[in-house]
Image 1 (tube, helix red, strand yellow):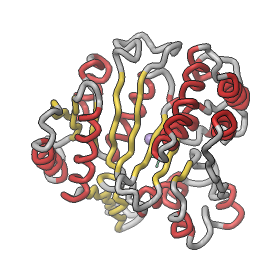
Image 2 (cartoon, protein in one colour):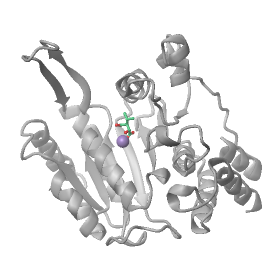
Image 3 (tube, helix red, strand yellow):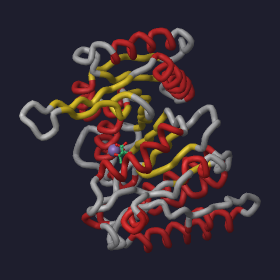
Image 4 (cartoon, protein in one colour):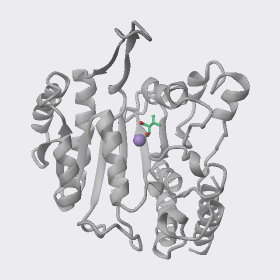
Length: 334
Ligand code: IPM
Ligand code: MN
């Protein structure tokens, strides 16, 4: 919010009317719920949601996830999760094939409402040796098709126009063969897009060994979760990876949040890298049509990375708030 306010001051002519809501683990610990009754309906009135990482060492993860972030993604039909990644100038990439943004410039599109996160399943014979737990992945033709259309349209707008569909359709023979089938159908409408299919295991190797052969990476909910962390690692740190959960129909608000989690080990210590949140704000500003504001913020963030004005995860010496101040002053000086 500090950075967005700095951009507002610098540019004038646009305003973000922001409301801060205390939906959080702290609220859960004092009241027993993450958000007040009717919260999902209340949220519908907003154009966008900026979301911090959620979680608390004292609250089991499945509670924080299913009380807050996952219902928003699902109820608001934010069926695409966009996770851009590249190696910014000044970043120290590990000694792998990809050394710069020329080698690695991808967008990962993760289906965000169904698949392995459908929330279906259960446990029977609990606590007995007979116990059975099921975790059912659900794939619908409609869900896959709307997502696939967004994916091909995204690839068509990128310079390389390459698209790779990642599944595990050799082992998961129902849901993921449906993916392959729908991909064939949708691809017919995008002859300019060159596309291929990969199995997720082999994909991890290709991401490391042949990063230049990839561009738009299209995958299921869980596989996208995993591959986007790998991609963030290849780009230097999970601390700078943004994500957008979009409802491309714009019926419901879209949501913007860092890829990373709550990082319990550094919680409350002013050490977390604020760049992932700021780059998520950049994506939010673009989504809201504020291109100039988005690019102003993005330029300032890139400058801070280039000049090594960073937190410890990137080898820098600054605290969270010092990075934020530095970025705000770049915005003011522009
Ligand atoms: C992410 C996170 C979430 C996910 C968790 C917090 C539910 O890991 O956004 O990548 O698994 O989707
Ligand atoms: Mn994740």
